[in-house]
Length: 417
Image (cartoon, rainbow, N blue to C red; front, side, top):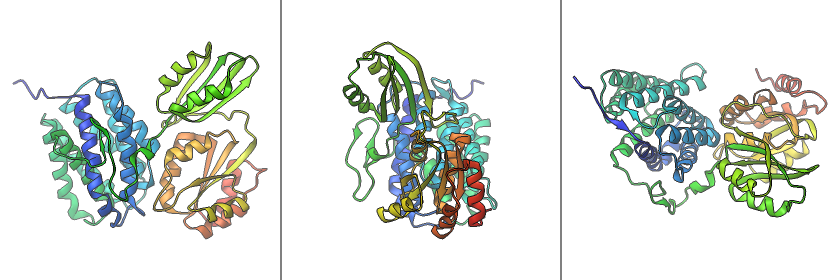
């Protein structure tokens, strides 16, 4: 007997992702009103999903593996809030399962979804188990049996959804995490069938106007690749070169160094940056780092031994934090959580050799933990649960001590276990 010969292409994958984004557009306000996944979890999920979708809008990879990797990279870097970090890890696992594939069979694609759910489970180790993980496990079990039966991908997703529905009796049906997981898989199924209409973004027609009161998805575009290189041309026009680089990048730093010009920038298209740089002179020491993966990046002429980084929800709090000795301030609130990329980007500024990342809300904790996973020993965490606890921690900061010593002293001062 010949088995299921269905093949999933890169175009199919783009439709699925667009369908999931469309479904979150319809559901995010409802999710915001639900409990269990932090403040404004629907908005955080929508913006995380927007970052992932934008990465595919002008992508030219025809293979499903290339599309999946682009999406995962952007989602991990653009993740906001606890729910956004969990969803980004789901994408990262899917990309892992599709690595190196131009197309995928239904079985291979179903297994990739199982990888994704496994990655999502690993990112939330807390007990008791959160409903989003309970539902994810049930979905994985349903997908596993459908994959073993060699069913078409639509039936695999349908079986996964049904298994999740059956497990709802074990969790609060009004939990935001559970609703997020259902919304994602329902959207993927609609996208694969072509049964969706997105009012804000279309991967085939480009961007159009968004809903009233909704964040413009273009504001969630991420630049997850750090490019460093040297150009042998001491007579280069620094300002003209920097202006050209900024067309496809952020944080463009161009500095003379003997007979060379050193370049450090963040971009979503490293190939374009290298193409631009070639026109200015011979290149050497070219280094491209995917900042959405764990990496080690040494400070480049850092001004300080250790810096304190915190999140401010408005200008008043920002001034207060500065007066209390905070060196780097990232804009964000419980309703508008900063992205992982914003935290990582701040630590790439080369201001200091090491950073202590300080939070005043539980909504920021998983985002900062993800930044720590990406940056490793370059950062240490002090995860306060409110502003009063954060203030106690700040008073214990000492710029003469190491980041590790500071983090330990600050946690002890604030009573953080």
